Image (cartoon, rainbow, N blue to C red; front, side, top):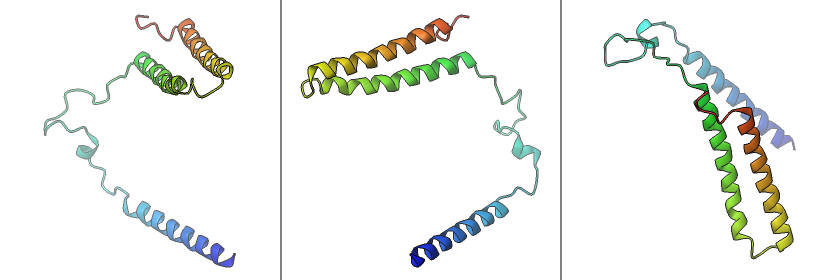
Length: 117
């Protein structure tokens, strides 16, 4: 037990020293205007490099990602239909599809899927 405690403490000490050294050595000492500006092939930038991002597009992308992951969870249900009990298979798949449809209905009623508004 003492060996485990000493090895753990040595590991924590070494990790702390490495993190402190990395923090000290990586500090920027010179604030240069050219390093903080966006690079455009050596020319001065014409406009802002930070363009506004459509929040509606981001919301649609997140909803798509969530439903895409849920669809990938649905795919194995078809392959286990012949292995499992038919009643438990139907209840599980129906409940999962019901939850998906309720989520889609909620998003639709909240107006998250209306792109034109």
